[in-house]
Image 1 (cartoon, one colour):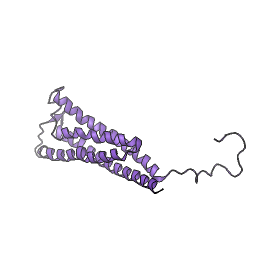
Image 2 (cartoon, rainbow, N blue to C red; image 1 turned 180 degrees about the vertical axis):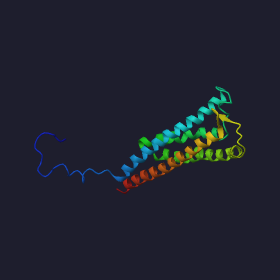
Image 3 (cartoon, rainbow, N blue to C red; image 1 turned 90 degrees about the vertical axis):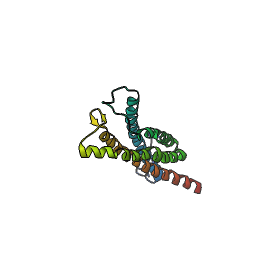
Image 4 (tube, one colour; image 1 turned 60 degrees about the vertical axis):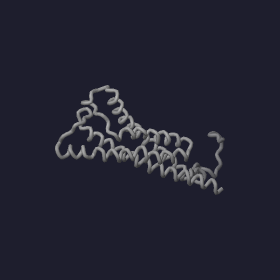
Amino acid sequence: MTSRVGPRPASTNGSDFKPREKVAPHYQMSASLKSEVRKLNWVHLLIWLLVAAQVIVSHFDLVSHDTVSIPYQWEYPYLLSLIPLLCSSLSLPNNNISYLVISMISAGLFSVAPLIYGGMEMFPVAQQLYRHGKAYRFIFGFSAVTVMYLIMVVAVQVHAWQIYYMKKLLDSWFDATQEKKKK
């Protein structure tokens, strides 16, 4: 431990820390990628809560179907997208590669696949709304297909960035474990 009081050696003026105080690049990258994945997890949770709220409100008839329409079929499998969210959250504190891989695979299966199916499921309704101006499902007075497409656009971007950052994080962790094995 160093003391703040007392004589200081003549050869040190406080600027000699650069060769001693270096954090390995993969640790820096890991920390920044973890931060990005955590932010995206919060946005994913918010999207999931919106979809879950619509499903719950509709199924328990908490409000009339004129106010909140019945859910589309893609929304039910999308509710399983909580699994990759939990796996990714569990992988971050201890750099657990297994949970991160499970999260990446299940993100494609439970997050992206239902969104692709939902885009195809809602396309004829969106086409009818565009061509004829007729909407049959509403969420608080807005066309349900429009609201759900807006949610889907944000969700696709969030999930794409999540998978991208998780892949970069996996590479960072894998490189770090390979360097440890070489030593």
